[in-house]
Length: 148
Image 1 (cartoon, rainbow, N blue to C red):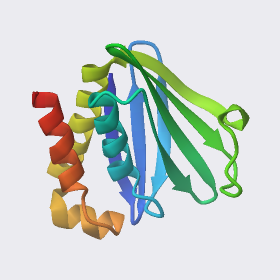
Image 2 (tube, helix red, strand yellow; image 1 turned 180 degrees about the horizontal axis):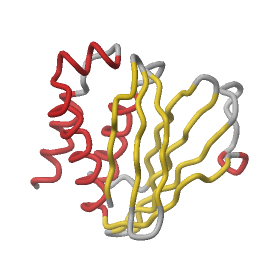
Image 3 (cartoon, one colour; image 1 turned 90 degrees about the horizontal axis):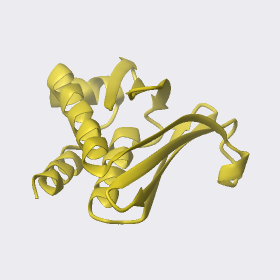
Image 4 (cartoon, helix red, strand yellow; image 1 turned 30 degrees about the vertical axis):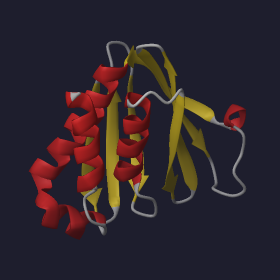
């Protein structure tokens, strides 16, 4: 599995998800802490939570990332909702991406993608282009969990 988070303009990015079978491109906006929220959700799954989720707000819309752990595997679904309010149940979203991966493979892909974003832009460049600081602490916590 591969995850990339590419800054595409001031306050916007494109996430690329690729596995052995499928690919999806998911836009992100600075109106939510997209990368930081995904790092936190991946850390929770790594630590053993049975479910974890995060939402990326779009203008308008929502990208909902749902992670469900089953022993050593995690099922990831990304759903699209047109409009942000009121929040709707998962079954009303359009499934954009789905994969099943080993928990470690998934979490490493997220951590590596975030690390590449930091290396490509630097902390100052990330802040300038994204409009918010890079989620350094969340990346460090996920990396520490992966080392254990």
